[in-house]
Length: 294
Ligand code: CO
Image (tube, rainbow, N blue to C red):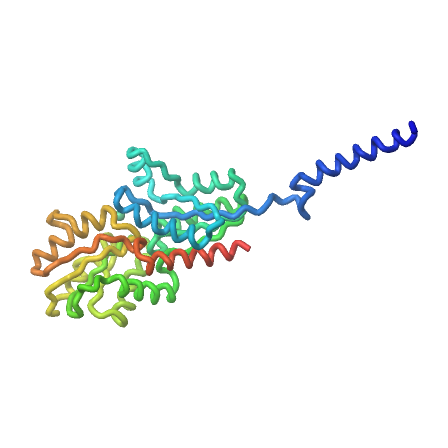
C-alpha cells in the first residue's frame, strides 16, 4: 500500500507538470516562434478638415468589409496635420509610432497600405523608409499607392470616367486637381494625362505644386471652344487644397482664375477615396500586400 502510494505521487506530479508545460506557447506549437497575429495599418497623408474625413472613413469601412477578422490601425504621414488635429483633440499616430504599438501588441504580420495617390515623398520616405526599420521585428508587406502600375493607370482612368458628374456635357472640360510634388514621382501626373488624352477626351490633370501646372492646362485649352470647366480633386480627400486652392473664393483659386478667363466653372467637392471606383483600387492593393504576408 505504502509502496503503491509512493509510486503514484511522482507519477501524478509528472502528469501535472506535462499539462502545465503543454499549455505554454513554446510547447503547444512545433517551434518556439510567437503565435501568428496579422494586422493592417492604413497610412494616409492626413487631413485637418473634419468634413473631409468621410473619405478615410469610407476606406476604413471597405477594409473592414474585405478583412472582417483583421484589426485595422491608422497612421498619418504628415507631421503638420497630426499637430493640427491634436489641437482639435484628435490623436493620430505617425508610421513609426503606429508600427511600434502594433509590435508591442504582438502583431507578427502587418500589411501596411499606402493611401497616397502616387509613390512620392510621403510614400518613399515617411512610409517605406520607416517600414524598413521595423522588418526585424515583424513580417511587413507594403501595399502600393493608388497610381503605381500601368494597370493602375487604366483603372484610375475608368474610375475618373465613372465619377464625372452625369450633368457634364461632352463638350465641357473636366479638370482634375492633383497635388504634385518636386519628387520624381510627380511623373505620374503627366503620365496620367497621356492615358486621359487617349481614353477620355477633354479630361485634363493639373497640379498645385508640380507639373502640369494650371498654366500648362490653360495653354492646352487655348484655341479650343470650351465654355464650361468641371473641377474635381484628384486627391483622396476634399481637404484644404480642394476647398481653398480649387474651389475657394480667393483671387488665386483655380475657380477664380478660370472664371476671370471667361470660363463657367463648377466644382465637385469630393475626394477620390469617397468613391468606390477609386477606394476599391486601394483595397485591392491592400489585398495583394496582405496575401504576400504568407
Ligand atoms: Co499640400
